[in-house]
Length: 342
Image (cartoon, rainbow, N blue to C red; front, side, top):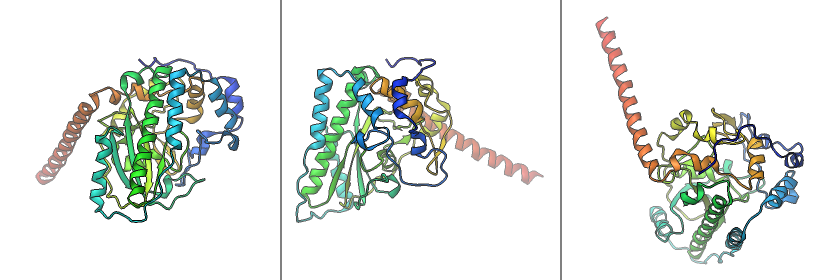
């Protein structure tokens, strides 16, 4: 099980000195009142090209992966490097709803557990990248909770890598399918910084709501899943966003907040690039993340991530919302009656 909160965590000075004056919270736009495109804050594909590169390499050097982990990473790199087929000259014509429905084939085959589609918004594209493709297909792969719950130990870390491997392979497979039918398709995989932020797109297409710990929560998987994506010009129908009362739940729950060793999870939302949202303090989180070669404690301890719990929680929240709505209507009705009697 994920460890209890570690009090008085002190970052390794060897790591923090390598960060020098780099301030990830500022790069992320904490406190900024205006919307803007995101900037790369970590997971640089080329550490030599970024101000935090030496710190990122320290993180790599500190890891002590075993042979199984090394093989999982080799397979992930191989999946990411898989070349995409040429775009077919003839476009296959289908209705937008049919395109979206056909994504179910990748769930049925076990490549992923969730799919969704939404138009791409400019504010999701990193400021060092660009794309002309108008739609984004989101893919979700579920963690094996019995493995994930061991984070930050290597056993849990292996499942993180295993799911990033599955997510990358799924994105490549979907992109190949679209290109073979005559459409542009660009696979986006993690954890290295790609062209876009994937969480806002996943929320927009129905994967769930943003949790206090900065990750998506839904009733099906809780927070225990990873993302990949495909940018495309194929004319998909959008899938709608879904709300379950998770935002309200997180405002009253402190499980991840209390379990976070570096105390990086705030009890209140913060203004980030013009949006009031849950935000994890980068400058507190990343030293612990680096020292433990990955973390994911907040995902593992989230009540929604426990198998079979999420759907029950969603049902309870729905009943609560209905009860509150009924109480509000009654108060309005009682107020109108009182006015009539005066």
